[in-house]
Image 1 (cartoon, rainbow, N blue to C red):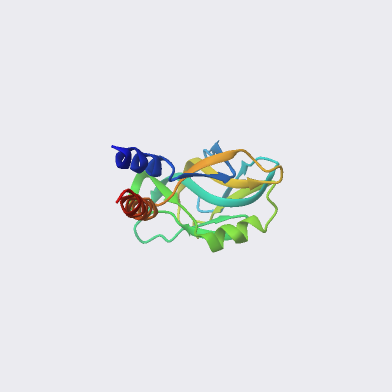
Image 2 (image 1 turned 60 degrees about the horizontal axis):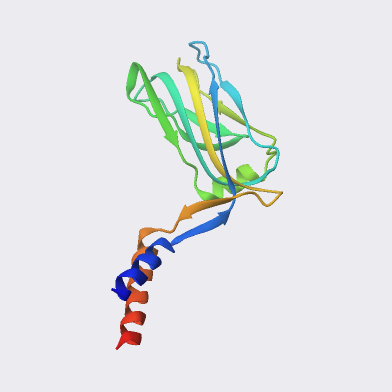
Amino acid sequence: MNKTILLILCLFGSIVCVNGESYSDTVNVNSAYTNSPISWVHTIPSNCTNITSLTIKIRAYDVDNSDYIPVSINGIQIGYLNGGHNNQWDTTTLTPDSDTLKQISDTNLSSLTVEVNPGGEYMEIDTSELTIEYESDDGGTPVKTPIPLFAIILTIVVMSSIIYNKIK
């Protein structure tokens, strides 16, 4: 019974606190049906000093399969809109890697300017949803972040081995 209790404690102990905060912002872009660049601004908290995670969901109309329409934040390309949906609405979700996040964090973080450049292809943007995890200059509020499953399993195996040897 003691082993079970200790294993349960190890499992719950596998949640750690990371100094950071979370923020979401939605912009109703409602652009015209155009072949010109479309841009909009997402506000971010004034105490944001470093973005550690970013996800943006862009709802676009008439992004054809052959279109490679780049998406940039503060002038740094983060990916392309999903293609293949002629004359239909579709949502693209982009999550930049850590190197790209560092480049974005090194720009002016008072806001995030998103730009979609259709390169002559006609399209439309409806909405943009931004979610970020960030570090703040005031230390922030701890955010509970789960450790990856492998680390949890490893902790359980190691702890049960230690407990088993001590009980023997």
